[in-house]
Image 1 (cartoon, each protein chain N blue to C red):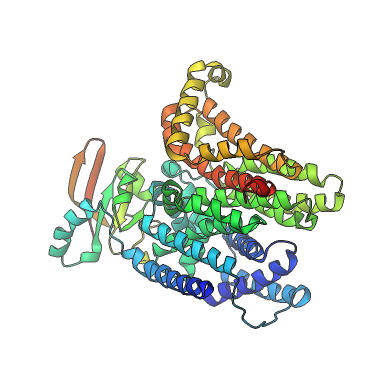
Image 2: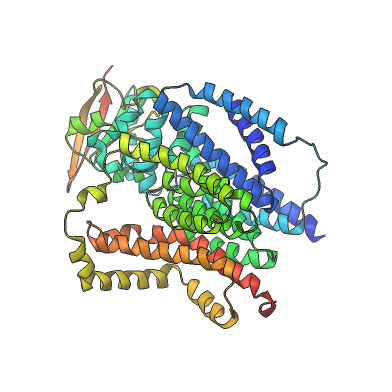
Length: 124
Length: 420
């Protein structure tokens, strides 16, 4: 009897583990303030996938569901070492790793302490 | 590519399980899967170094494994048996651990996962230009760190294109389940094996650390596996080649793995000294990986940030009483806050343990020396000591914690007449 209950328990646990893994990538991060604040602006733009966010602190990576892209080019363009760029469309095609030039222009910026953030729009 | 990787795992596990005799089935399954991951990681990295197509390498490996399985193992389709109550209990523990892990996980993991491990994986998955990760502009992402975890993530990203954050999340679960499986099945008295698993399951700090998707839980898992094999070595000398691979691969997970390799490797050499053939096998398997890691360190990576910053006199730091006080104070507070379970366990141990078995003496010494080596690094660190302790102390103890529990409950198993 106890064996049957255990088998049922294990089957249930396996079901929940698989179900949770399918939902986890969409799990909400509690501190999505920056991304949420950009959302309103994103909605106004005709090319939503072409927006990016730049920060000179990749601590910000903890607050994003978007991909963090850190590349020598990004670093040299903005001249700071501890820097990163976040792309919202997530397509590998738009990776900033090996582009010859950064096809993004700054449309807004903010400074708080040592951290500078830029909102970028991809050129056509 | 998914089919090739699946075939590689099925054949590889069958072959390795056939070669690993004398261990509990569950542990040999974990060990065989781990060996496959090690081989997969190195195959991928060698393909990058040699600019060779990884898919072709996988096809070669699948055929090679197929040949080995035909020669050394058999594929018997045995009838499905209902697992024993203990195996079901172990499955339930693993299921619970997976759910707790998922509860603590966030997409892309903690800071180090975002900025170091996943970051390196993105470069590795990007093909021939992966060496851009060593650009001096990216020094803050620690390009000198080993590539075991990033290579596994990169392989999965190549198999499932799109750089999904589910990949590092799912991969991060493997070492946690591996640790629990070893703790459960390594103690002959299974009722005792449940206790360390429950201790880890209810330890939120431990689960949180595993869910952060850092390489630290992988290192904790490899240290535990290496230590378990070291305890088994006197009975299973034919495992010398596996021990060599597992111990040397610690250096491919994190730089701290070098210290474990030196200590545990020296103990293995001591054990195998009268058995020259096994000793040679151990040295050959560990030597191959070590040579590859040394090549990676010398040829590709910049100097380690700590080694590069080491300017002041080490002797002055060693003489500074203040540093000893800071270290002791931090270690005491951290142990009391995050590892309270160790205190009652130590007290119970003091009452129950009447003698220390010879088989556990040297493995315990390895863990004690590893702890002191970690403390020694803090003493001479070029970084601000308080900052360094606050950012890494709990992770270094995380490396040792499963091994401490393993040795403790092996000791308890030898004194079970006082417990049951």
